[in-house]
Length: 439
Image 1 (cartoon, rainbow, N blue to C red):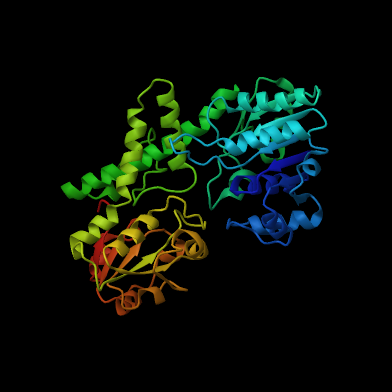
Image 2 (cartoon, rainbow, N blue to C red):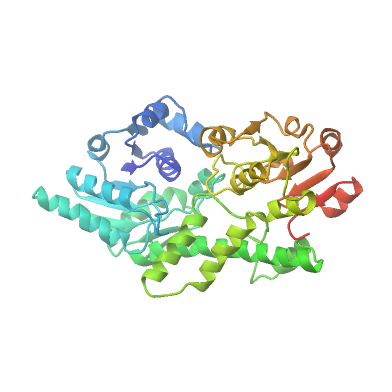
């Protein structure tokens, strides 16, 4: 098939690349010329395991194209995916300015019937709005092309996005048009040959499924963080509680790991957007608001632990951070707990050393651009003469470090573990003062 992807951010780039891997001819369109030129040269704007190799392979084979020219991208397109950003607006709702802008441009550009697919995470009712905008522009041109707008929300996890796309657990398609449903089935058939994973439903239910899924996962994280906080007070171990809970088949083991708060591009803004949607329709989403509140407070968990040990005046002290990204296998720092931790340590007078395998550049260029932060090239050099280690992101290289080396580098044998990577008994045996979440 001939496919157009509008937007070469995280979702658009993974989507377009994976479609091209299956032999489709894909045009990825973006308004940022520098990004398009970099992609043509094999320079990838995000870190995602396996993505760079696929982009280079399919670009060199002629299946994958990058352009700023929407007319070029749409000239022979059967399917056009909208994959632009939907950031959080000032009122908490999803900001649809880029979606609306793209819809208008599609209506001004297309020269044939087309299926337009909302891949961006958008509020319920957006597909109807996109269709209205496109048809309004077609009316201005006196054109009568058939435009079918389909909802096809993404369920990609950063760090495993390529594998998630290639081997999806489910593919949600929202449409009432039988012919559009058949084309979407044909498009996704190479990804679901071993087992039928496509679920066809009405458009509004598909749009809602994305928000409901992310909010459910965020709910489990906040619930476990609250349980961990209770365990702290009563002397229970959240790791034991987690194993006991997870063994119940009705609950399962996924997303039961407590920590220092969730971040990223999806959970924070999607929970907030769903809260706003509920409020706009006269509802008070008490549970969703609690999920958001618990997560906000949890990002201060390690800071409060540090204050309990060192006090509020951290002048003359140095803290070493392992991990900046909101999760491992990505360089994404959006809504990351590390931002709160670093900013508060600096405010209290501390010196801050940081190391992350992938997120150092984005930290320097954006998140910590105006902050006095010291960057190190490996996990051990960042520890030298630090008063304590703070583990924020659970990268694999932090799982089984040389603890004797850590002790020789730190001034104090103190570890604040925001991801519960180590066992209390083992840390005690090694003579570490170990502060974890709910343990």
